[in-house]
Figure (cartoon, one colour):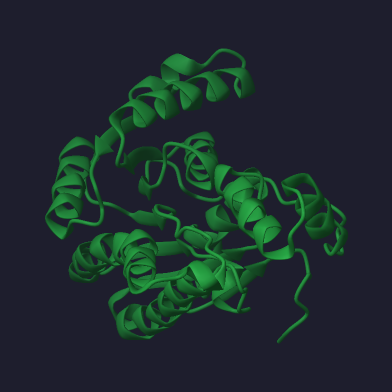
Length: 273
């Protein structure tokens, strides 16, 4: 399916690895120009290399076609000025941002007895404000231009309270409210805002979460992972590419009447309406 994303400028925060990188590759394959934003320049350079190599493999050696369609911008998105600087640099390279995908930041999983006031602040800084600091300038610029799409990759932990993910889950829940609110506030200005809530996904934070679960249950990490898998109706953990496919659709003109949606991607582990 042609998602009509050819030559669109897509900015992906947290784009150097995991779900963000999978999203970037998907957009690249659709013919978009992709700006990757992440805190660590070395990770960004590795992510860009991975993107070009993966694109070449998929397209039969066409890495030259992708070479000029990927830009990287290092920024600590906990700093609002840093976020704006990265946005300005990305738009200088590829023009106005047509699509924003937020996938940066992850709050540390922490057993309840280990939580402190600082833990709650850190979770909001790591997940909530890293998104807000980019959403705020981007949605306003999109609104002035009369078009744009934003997809926030959040997490099912904002819907279902987990004992080891309360601080991060609170940040996720807040981002869901922001996504729905921004969708309503900017719909008349031509901007769509949606969110995707992955459950367990094969990324680096998965192992950290399993360690916290294991500590709480008094079992080994491998056993915690097997128990988690056993609760999944689909019988397996999601891949970043599967999450990316949903993000691409929501960001595309094919989803032109979808805004304010919060899409669960936990494999039906939590049957809810």
